[in-house]
Image 1 (cartoon, rainbow, N blue to C red):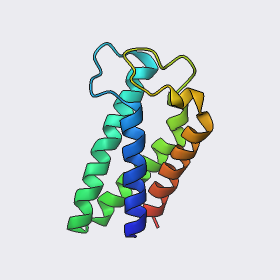
Image 2: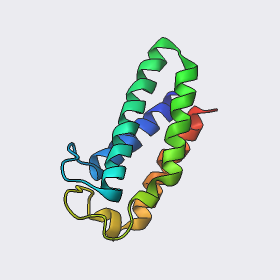
Image 3: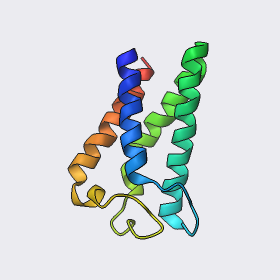
Length: 116
């Protein structure tokens, strides 16, 4: 179980720090939606981590389910042309889409493993 927790945290950290901005100022459309989704995911991860200490498996399961759903839909939030300011999504997402898809798959699998 600790392996899966570590995997999801590391994967999420890499995705979040390579694809979002700390500010939503001026963001609209898909860029704002993407930033909002990452902010929500960050909050869910904090809640999951806190819930492990409390052994609140209902919150962990609900959070993992939301993260898994986000992972399945995440790629749709990175259409071509959505890497313009105010987005701070890394250019590599569009230059190396296979690696980005692999990171998303790992995130989704790790989320699903929390449900087992």
